[in-house]
Image 1 (spheres, rainbow, N blue to C red):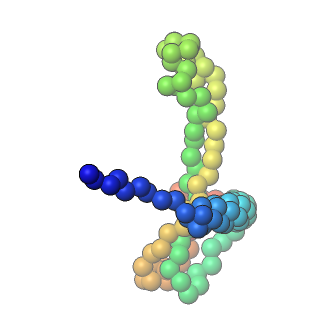
Image 2: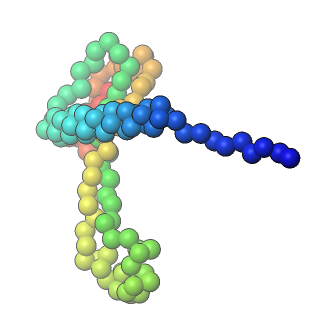
Length: 121
């Protein structure tokens, strides 16, 4: 007769999970705060200094509709969804994108982004 093997979750596993979850929450708050601060500075026209390093930053505006077409269709129908969409403006968000680039690109001068109010290199 075969003996079934059971998977075991130990108290150590649970403790590690809880510890990592708490650390992640702390990092999430810190990241959100720093993101907000950087977006604020960049939106106010701050320049990105060309220093020793290979990081670049850009701010990309993103428009999102808060109404879900998939959720509304079965409730109110296609025509009503289209009418609501035409009345509700998309919510504007800004994505902060920090990327690594080649050292040769870092030595270039700062160039304005497409909307001329944000800067990157």
